[in-house]
Amino acid sequence: MDDRGKNTFQEINSQPEVWAEAINVYKAGSKVVGELWAENQPDQIIFIGCGSTYYLAKTASALFQYMTGVPAFAYPASELVLTPEVVIPDSRKVLLVAISRSGETTETSEAISLYQKRTAGKVVAITCDSQSTIAKQADVGLGLDTAKEKSIAQTRSFTSMLILAQSFGGDIASQELKDMEKLPIVAKRLLFEYRPLAKKFGESQQIKKFFFLGSGLLNGLANEAMLKMKEMSLSYSEAFHVLEFRHGPMSMIDESSLVVGFISDHATAQEAAVLKDMHNLGAKILSLSEAPIPELAPIAEGIVLNTGLPEWMRPVTYLPVLQLLAYYRSMSNGLNPDRPANLDAVVKLTL
Ligand code: F1P
Image (spheres, rainbow, N blue to C red):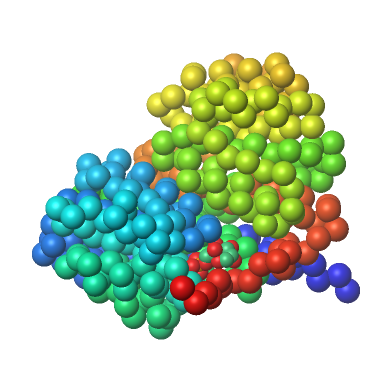
């Protein structure tokens, strides 16, 4: 029997249940992280990770600053290890948030050690292994062990760790978290309703190039969707800030391009205009937005999220259908999405 992609497919579709667990895990840990925050009063937050978890760090830092007003930055963990001077500011009370599915990635673990040597700042770890090296290095850990995948590419681990990070940000900003409980239902609906669309685009071999455009809270997620497409299907795949796409990258657009637009609420018109321009250059268009966008109806297929949730709670809902897109593309290319070429689940180095 052909078992290709069995794990990835199951893991993508298990997100509603795993997200519900993530919400409960945060509830259980909120007192401890809240106390750490109150005792240390950080005036800057640095998020680190590698690969997918770097893109998660980007998403979490944008969300955190948006929610709390505290300056937040994201770096690949290796940047902190190799050039700490440009990552750790001298004069600030910094909180380091280290994100790692495995909790064993050498760069992230080394970055924590170096940060702890150089500063008196605290460390929060978000992982999918509460007994891992990184979880043990941290002052406080938020861990969701059941989100870890058998597959190498991160799908449900990414979104579940994002739910932990956004709960943390929302909590610090004194936001009501109750509505987060609607997220699993939304994920279930989106995975059911838009699976045929993901399959159609994923299996279309007319499409040779994938471009993922997202800004603000959504840029890290556009990058993660880009990485999923690369890892699982070995396809040409790039990510950009939406309006940046006109400043050079659009020279790559032709009839073999699919442009996926992560459309925000507050800049719908400007972002939709970029998608229209790319349609005029020959690209196929897929948009994701909270509500239908009438001006795109004639030229784009649309994924309507229809979450009814505040904008900060909603970014995670953009990903599941795009994970399916990468899965179907991989299967259509005759590959095994569970085992991307040249990759291991953890990168261990001698640094
Ligand atoms: C990070 C990571 C993954 C990537 C690859 C290698 O791991 O870069 O994002 O898919 O499998 O490892 P982690 O620190 O989040 O465990």
